[in-house]
Image (cartoon, rainbow, N blue to C red):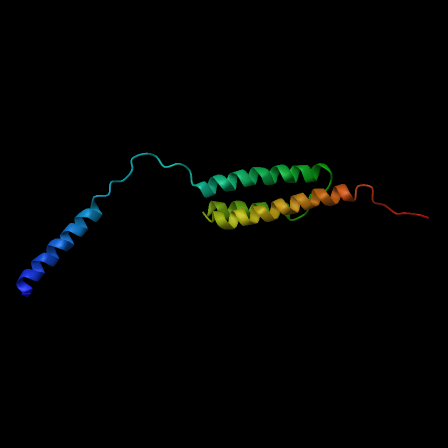
Length: 112
């Protein structure tokens, strides 16, 4: 095949591909909130509830507040994966603090 017929065909094909790629219309509908942000906010509410439950029986562990603060900072930077991971750690500590306080509520010296 002659190159004089090949080059115009390639140019036409390239123009068609470029034209098809450029016809994508931007959505004018407002996008909903980021699902990761929604998950973060829901997990944060759950952590706060667990923390308050643990604190009500004197079982709030020291690091829960620190971890929650780091999670909020990570979320503010947009790193929701790290933030949710930190919140799960804080939630675990809140649950374990409550469980520990309940198991040890009657602990004391046992004199025989």
